[in-house]
Length: 93
Image (cartoon, rainbow, N blue to C red; front, side, top):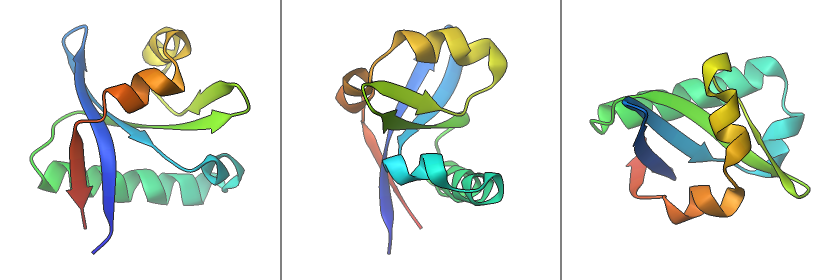
């Protein structure tokens, strides 16, 4: 059964499920990215986690992400190591 480590955090009163993904995620088609996000979301919600799934990945010395527009400043302000430090749950499917 595949498993995935995530950072389940509450930021500014909002639950977020931050999912570190392989840097190859950046090169996937939009449909493949959406499929991956949906799978992580289904597994996370089945595990009882609430919140919006935000995939993050390394792009050189920066971090890529797919998040709702209001959250872009937050995700631009954190680093890859910040995310990894906050990994606190594992979901399986």
